[in-house]
Length: 372
Image (cartoon, rainbow, N blue to C red; front, top):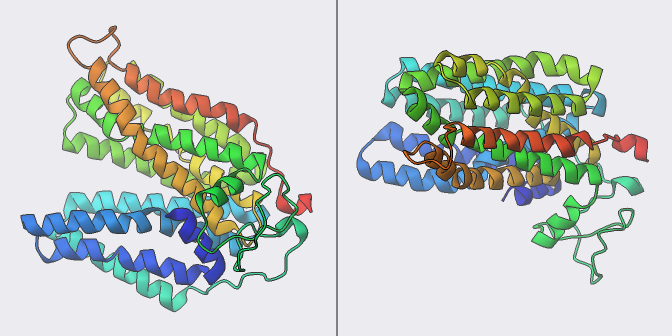
């Protein structure tokens, strides 16, 4: 869904396509704000699943494309970092609200916040006007023209490629192969999301079984783990990205993620996970660094589909991650593990970040302007 939404935003404008997921996100919390019976909960789950297919990644990829439309390449990394930081700060506010509000109030506040976002966007957000004339290097892969009866040549990047408004799988694969840097960034995004997915349910299961974590413990760790990203994305990335580059930040973040889970995998005291939760101050720079690298490799008419492809790859990894790591975690926490290392599955989650260092070290960012 994300490449389709991103490509449509390239064709019809960012504001029009951003309106769809922002408006749909209002519906699920309204249901539980109204009533929280069993039937309403099932309706909520169904609608949350359906709207999540559009909203969860759609808002992010179109917002990133909108930022790319308004920021120069020199300032884009800082802007993307600030955008990610605002999202992390919002998550922190939501976690804090959960501590002080009742269940009914939580969904009411969520409904009001979503509605305010939709109204604010319609009133204050200016739509972007896409550039109609492109240089040869900036010719879009997906354009609002009729399909030509010619075969697709993925290896010739200087040819004008004309596709449908709704891209096929073949179109998306060709798009991923357009730039070696883009392909490397996509592989890093997959491995990063594979590790992030393992940090959720499998890691929480490990903490509960190993250290007898309860709801309050999880909330404290989540709060620490999200305050650090909000701080680093809002403050560190705008400062460091222009100085050392997104490629260096990407490698540092991946190494920090592996170090975090390596420490957790051998932890024997309950305070160690709390301390290790401070390392996301660097790990949180991975995703905005990838998004910035991708943005700088793509022309102005392809920002939406590019971010949509990265978002889709990340979503696939998040789906696969629990099916890989949850059984492994259960196996090594059982009474008869293959060998005695309860945190082995957590180490394996961290290895995804360590492996991602290899393609990230091969990334050489060549801005689009310098290639023209």
